Image 1: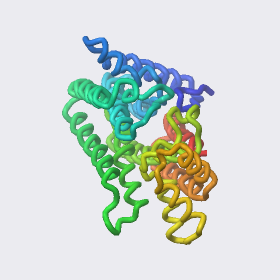
Image 2: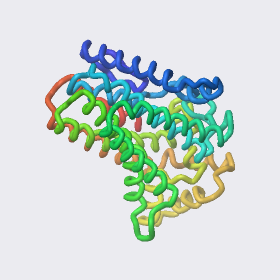
Image 3: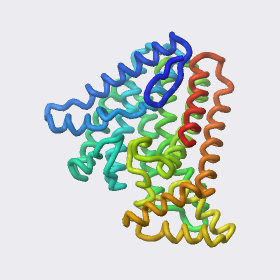
Length: 336
């Protein structure tokens, strides 16, 4: 059994292990090549997060999905590079919006070079992804465009908040389907599609990716509250400080309204105060870490991971399918 990638996937089959390792190595080379510029400063900024590492979760999914066809097909690695470049670009933009100081254990691009250059570097990565995508054919361009529209729509809906009468938890899960699920679904779809897998397999893996993507983000929500910066690679409680309503907070508000307990109301009041104050922020984190709302968010994460696992049932039994099932378990493990 070998652990592949920083996400911690255990691969028991030597042939699959070799394919996954080779695929991820080729993606890494592709990322470095795609982020080079004739302007040295642009190269430095564009490679800032590439060189910081990361889980490479989306390229891993491309590589595994390609196992259901020809994993050596010429479009597999470039499509993985496209998906990861798109993801990296959104991180540059997200950190500006969140005013984050740390990303993947290093200073965020906006902290190092300022907001304007961070946004422009994200735009540069989008442009490079589009350039690679153009060589993968019109279907790939359309799929990526649709996913990118969903991603941006999810971000807009998150910023705008739920409309009057809309359940905040339902709204948030829809947001995650767009912001995170859409691109992870594309990773699975590209891997299967570029490998020439059967259309029914492509559809199954796309649905799997959507559900796994939501579970993945919910696990991040839990980590943002429950972990330290060493474990998560970014400052704990970043969303909390910025007033972004992640699932543990939404579950707390839901519980406070339903049960009317004084301690819940007091914690909601604390969350509604100025959490740029370090002492208040630390207190809010400490109290949320032991609150039942965090455990409820963990249960939600497990539910989506289980749905992703169930989606795989029509696929033939093989090592790649077992690896995809294990990724569901890994997401649950991340959430504790």
